Length: 305
Image (cartoon, rainbow, N blue to C red; front, side, top):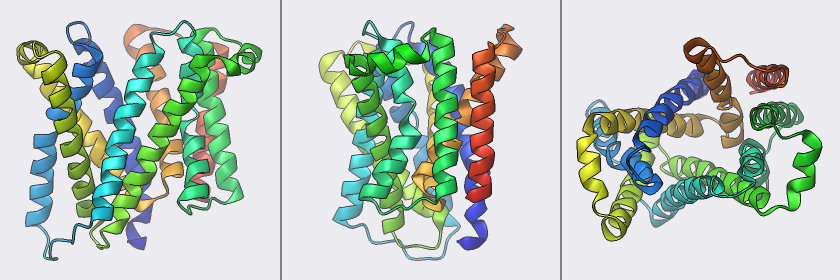
């Protein structure tokens, strides 16, 4: 796997790019669907494509099917639950008065991943790695602050605010999801990193799909009719979602989760670039400084990773 260790870099960048497309498609669905239903769509319509990808990989391999342990299932379930809870908390933030503050603190996900990974998962990070992570996180927070109109002093003052802590907890659950996804994949003990990542993804997607579909069926079954009317967009969400998840799972298999999540912040540059090219929205000086910090952090990350 050493020969392919550098692949996590282009895979992560590709996953972040695809995630941007998925987010745009999901925003289109929010006009008619509830937030929970939109979240369910990414799992429900992504699962068939994920199964097809796993089947393709399985036909190309000669190794025996890996043993599935209860520990692997537990880590996969934890990763899936972490993603759902993190998404739910992020959505809940938008209902709060100071949601922008919470969103800014949620952007510390990469730093939280590094902390939790080092303390609980034995993922030691070299000093240059910590520097790269902190610089890129600072850049993302600066971009968020610039877009929401909050000043730095106000952000620190509002640390005691409810939305700030929900934002931190949200980032923490996403961090746990990333770390346990990597842990589950590594537990399979195979040389084929693509198949390991795909199998981990399928276990996660299956559990997420079943849980979300049952929840929507019980709480708001009429949403399924609306989903049927928006089938084309739902398929786009499913394809881009599973493609992104394949990228994340593969990158986590190859590299520490903290490094992957830090590099993934390139997504914010994609977002601002799209705003400029398609909507002619110009970035403020603060946003440009934030972009510069993200790029600097990414360069350091690649050099030390």
